[in-house]
Amino acid sequence: MKKQKIISLLFLITAAFTACDNDDNKDTAKVSEPTVKNVEIGTANNKRALIGRDFHFNADVIAGDKISDVQLKILPKKGETYTKDWKLELSWSVYKGAKNTNVHKHFTIPAEAPEGKYDFFFIVLDENGTKLEIKEEVTLTDPANMPADPLIGRDMLSRNEDLIYYMGTWVEAELIFKKNDKLTAHAQVSQIMGDGILYSVLIKKSLNYYPESIDNLDLKKVIVISKVTHTGLPAASKISTLQKINEVWGGESIVVGADKDANGDPTTADKAWQSGQYNWVVLYKNTTYNMSVYKSMPITIAY
Image (cartoon, one colour):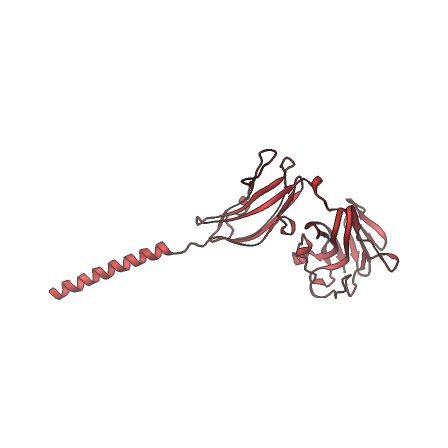
């Protein structure tokens, strides 16, 4: 009888310790928090915004459990002085319930925003109660006060010397190029100075690849039509895809089906010509002032 009481007592003590251990495990169990990578605040991640212009933001988010909300805020920075009170707060419920997603947004910085340095917040709320918060500094500037304000214009496309698109006017409803057609793509970048680089490229839509700056340009995935660089330009200068090569103006055309692109790279693998939808993309970066712009237009190749 005495032996049974001792065994029962040992059992109760063991059970009590086991229960405590389980409680400790519950208390110390980690709840996964959201994570983020490939963050771009402003074009080419320059952390700048032009008032009244488009602003670019990108981030790849993986939730701890599932996304509850995604928020972006541009708030006054402590210690800074502004001409008026202003802030911007955005929330995108479209990502609710996603486990992982690409947050790629473009929005206009309101014209009433005052110039200055601001705190930039990117916030991801998780359904499990955790939160991810990124804080950076962004600078808002009136374009009129920028030493360089690159603008892409005078964009034109010709097929075998016949103009089929120019500056928003579509001569043909669909811009179709066939094998051996001469494709001429003209564009101009104005309001620039200092140093910079301009690319005009073709990209298959099937690649699901949409670079918005030269920093993200993968030359293995694009057919280069033209590349132009400049150095030491004075204020209010402009350049175009048209170049003078061996005393002859040109350098902005490619024959559909050419073995190599204008960069001298073979048109193979992801660069191989094929029938389908393409984007003609113009990308410019002013390397002196770290400013980038791009423009994209659909064309069709019937190879």
